[in-house]
Image 1: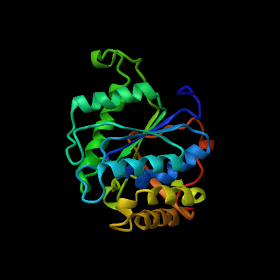
Image 2: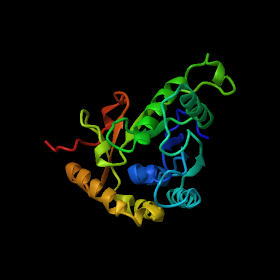
Image 3: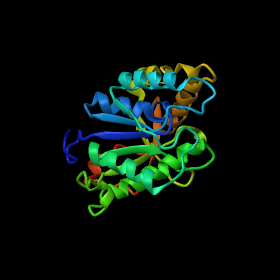
Image 4: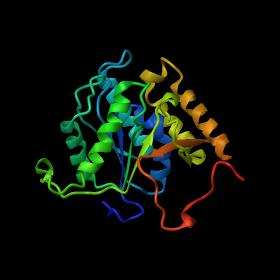
Length: 240
């Protein structure tokens, strides 16, 4: 894989359930893979507790969606759907994955409550894991070299999960809406129960209107962003 200094170094995205990454950040994933960035999904359950769709169906849907977005995919077990708890053991599991993939960018759900409890818990687990991954002295992780990511960004799977106390980074996904829509629609067992695809597209249209573009997806940095030059900035949502 490219080095952490490369502009095309890997992006590692975590989801609690088989559809979370696609619904919350699928357009961003499509943008990155079109640009040539390797993207790897880690899905931390197979939707075992869900009312609609078996774990086998959910797994197949996730595999199809990841392929449509140009991402690789693996599943891990953090106790099962609806059983996530923040723990050192889970953070060490995630930290080991970060060390193996060696990404520069990591995406995880927001830590905001008032949503599926697994989402916020996973956001906290990943946030802690990103710190642990760079500690060279941890005995549990000595099998792989320490790795420090550049940026942890949180995505919201529902409007309830959007951070209210911080301005987001708005990512213009207007050019990849068709690919994003196809990836969301691949989760047919979920889309059949409620129009989740339209819900996400409507959210993206709202955020796009804020920024003067067709569709945008918000992300929230876990820490203040640092740029090497103001040339890296495009514009703000409010065109003064």
